[in-house]
Image (cartoon, rainbow, N blue to C red; front, side, top):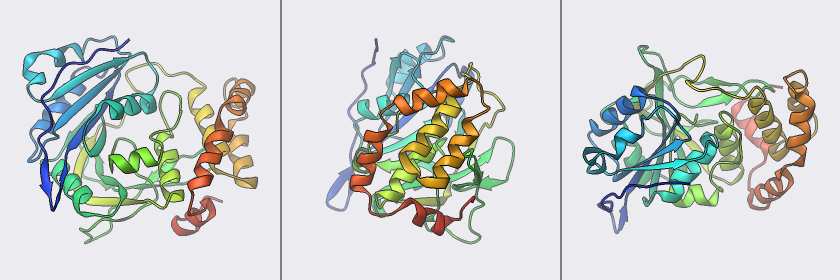
Length: 310
């Protein structure tokens, strides 16, 4: 069951002979005041989105009900509630509702710098077909990361420091899911976010599919935001969801020793046998075939270009 609130049609911005519109998609689950502070930082920007789609992923804290008020609706905020399905599904639901030619996906515990959306929008308007990663810092810290790389078979990532003196977009391995921007046509061509459980690795899968599909992931170091990194989210997570997501990435994208190494990391996690049975019983073969059918670059070329954990 879902509900939506009406919003004014996005006002197009002329880009040469074409018009672009920007939709911001914010997935949230029991974020409370963090959600409202995130949106306030969005609307304090030099450029704001033509619409803001907030997807309530089964929350119970009432934080999204506030956004049904006229003052938020007048700002172009649309609230859509789904049964709890995880961040990837919530973002996909928001993308289906959104009407913009450009999409920015944002976590609900961020503070955008004044020109963050302006620079992301300009890069989408002017740049090549790409997935964009802003510069991200922890709330209260000046240290920034801009893009990330895989560092081990657990599929953990390490943030990359911005390249010194570089202001133009440049290639990075991954755009962490806390904030990424992409043209709608590119997002749909890549199949949106994959079928992942709860939280984690949907951004790794998206980055790998982008690479294999010939779409670069580009850092936009001038677009800055603060993200509240937390040891635990404000909701309960299953003990098996991340292990399942590791297995799914391995099955869809990897071969041989690399796949085996990832699957071995699942062994020893809670209910490992159950996780592996469920992962192998899923639709990974169809997803693997679909990615392979449209792929123009290999996974091994990806690791050769950006560095390997092996």
